[in-house]
Every structure is written in C-alpha cells, then in structure tokens.
Image 1: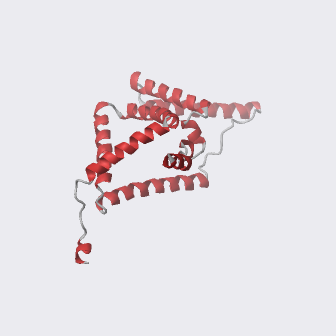
Image 2: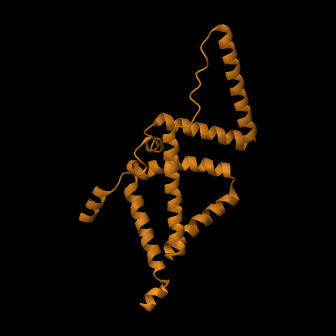
Length: 201
C-alpha cells in the first residue's frame, strides 16, 4: 500500500515526460485546434498521395511554382499600383533554432550509440532482445505497408497513444512491469559472459 502511494506520488506525468511544452499539448489534445489541424492535414496528404495516386515531387513542385508566381505578380502589381509588398517573413534560420536542433540531434545520436554500446560492449541480453524485437517488427511491418502509410499510422498513434496512456496509466504500467519481470526471468536463464580481466584478477 505504501509502495503504491509513494510510486504514484513520485511518478512523472505524461505531460512532463513529453516536455511539458507545445508538443505535449498537441499530442495530449490540450491544443485541440493544432491536433485537429494535424490530423486533418495528415489524413488529406495520405489520401492525396496514397489513394489518389498523386506524386509527392510533382505536388511540391506545383505548389512552389504557384506560390512563387503569386508572390512575383503581387510584388510587380504593388510597385505599379503603389500598394504594400507581400508580407514575406525573413527567410533565414535563426541561430537559436539551429543550436537547439543540433543539441536535440546530438542527444538522440548519443542515445542510439549508448544502446549499441550496451549491446556490443556490456553484452546486455535484455537490450539485445528489445532491439531485435523492434527491428524485426519494423521489418515485418515494412513488408506489409509502404513508408507513407507507416508515417500516417505513426501520426495517428502519436495523437492517440499518449492520450490513452495518460487516461489508463496505472493499468498500462502494471502490465508493462509484469512483462518486464517475465523478460528478466527468461534472461536469467542465459549465462552472462565473464570478462577475462576479472578472471585474471
């Protein structure tokens, strides 16, 4: 009883684990307008490219061509008619955004490298089993559906799974803990390798 109370009091909320920012508000549907726009736009793009058979490269080229033509004609007519120029934003990437993106990419790469080190150097069988299952699942799903549909499914899951997990967090955590205990019990049956340095010591 005391353990459950202490674990629930020290448990981090889903909103905090997602960064407690605009992305977390979007994925947890606290920003309903943004989540609805993301859902409708991703559904529209998936239907346009997957069902209607439209080509992505042709679509991007036509949209950019139309945008450039509109801006050019708007600017030309503005100079002739003494009207204000089109409100084009400053077309450059801010330094703060580039630094933050590089830091996020560095953290992600270091996390992947730590997993690889955990498998190759530490010889962790649990980590090897987890990575093998994930890669096998990705390979199996890739044989069934294409990458665009997989990306669309990822958007749908990202808009639904955090919301469901926040609502049923206790039940899901209980099932995950029981599954991890089962995996640990299986991994104990495999002998862990002993380093040669420890043998000499």
